[in-house]
Length: 215
Image 1 (cartoon, one colour):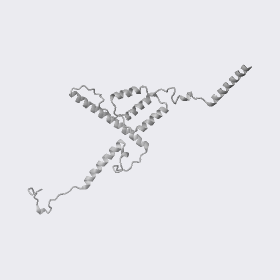
Image 2 (image 1 turned 135 degrees about the horizontal axis):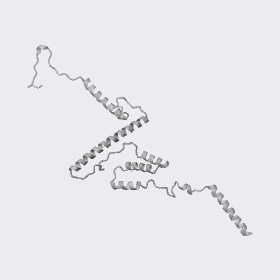
Image 3 (image 1 turned 90 degrees about the vertical axis):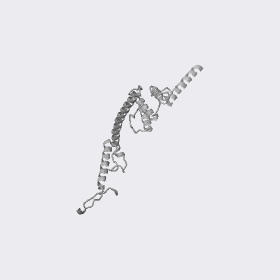
Image 4 (image 1 turned 60 degrees about the vertical axis):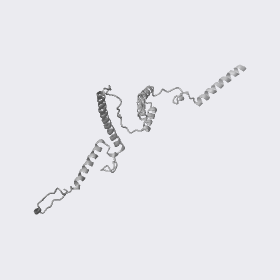
């Protein structure tokens, strides 16, 4: 209280005033409640297994790979929905700011672009998928869309001119098989037995013509 401020009390009661510190168990209860709420948030979105052992109150997640895949698909859809809402809100704010500044700007302007997917597949996986689609002789539209996804991962930040050039080249993708490609070289090959038989027939024909000439 200091030397200038004092509290008076009745000494006849026998109880002098003192500072009563709060019970530390109350603070621990609050911390436990906060951790429980955090765990419920992680479980609700399906990413409880991605946490470390120190953060996860229930220990290591023992769910299977298929279960984690379904959880990730759900998380991916939630992230995509959230990204669309944030992108729409940010575009509206930019549209209002541009309108206040007297700048004509379309509300659907491409200055702000959020990811359309939060897939964790890398470039190696995309190349493998593209190769398998080629081996399966997938439709051209499927392979073209796969190539668009691959280009977006290889070149995430490209100019508008380069984007238009890529789109122009994608119209001719996948390329048609030329005559001398590896896939069509099998048509130009020949069988050894067939050539030998044809060679024997040719030699016999030449021999008969030669004997007729001598006669």
